[in-house]
Structure formats: C-alpha cells, structure tokens
Length: 119
Image 1 (cartoon, rainbow, N blue to C red):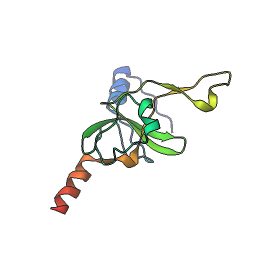
Image 2: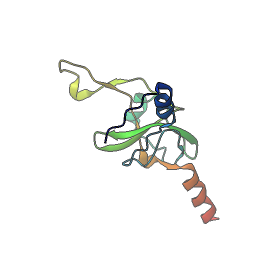
Image 3: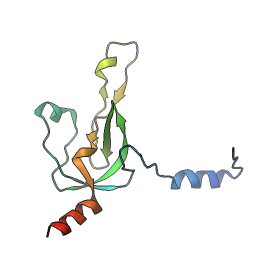
C-alpha cells in the first residue's frame, strides 16, 4: 500500500518527529548512555577527537553497523573523518568518522538500575 501525503507541513512534521531505532545496536539517537569500558588500545587514541570516560554519561548521535560491528557516535565527542584504508588506493575515497563499540556503553537507565540492585 502506498500513501501519498499532500500536506507538505504534515510530511515535515512526521520527518522531524521520527527517530530511528537501530534493531541491531539497540540504541537510537538521543539515548543517554554510560561508558562502562574506557580502556582503548594505544594505536586507537590518535584516531579519535576524544575518548569516553568510565561512568560518564553521553548522548547517542547515531547508531549503525560498521564492518560487521555494532557502533555508536556520541554528541559529546566528534572526530575528524578518516579515509577508509581498503579504498585508499581505489578510484574513489570513502571517508568515515571513527565510532565506538556499543559494548563500551549501557543505557543510563539500565546502568542506574544495576547500581541500585548492587546496593
């Protein structure tokens, strides 16, 4: 079934209120997350504009799967885009922002609940 929206304002309102929930990463834009693992290999440090800190709260900017890994971008940390190493010598360049593994984070409410249960 195809639905055509004739009212452009209604269409824009629908787009503005839509927030994608990534079924693979289980995070969506705007989710508040807590860093539960801030141990990064030394070679990764220069790739990022900053690194998350253990038990600090961050806001999800985007979530997706990158090279088979579930990752997120954070509002509070932005990094320069890097040229993808596999395409470096191809006819085209593909740039991406380094992202963080979802395994380094928990939703803030889940983290708080776990803390309360441990008390």
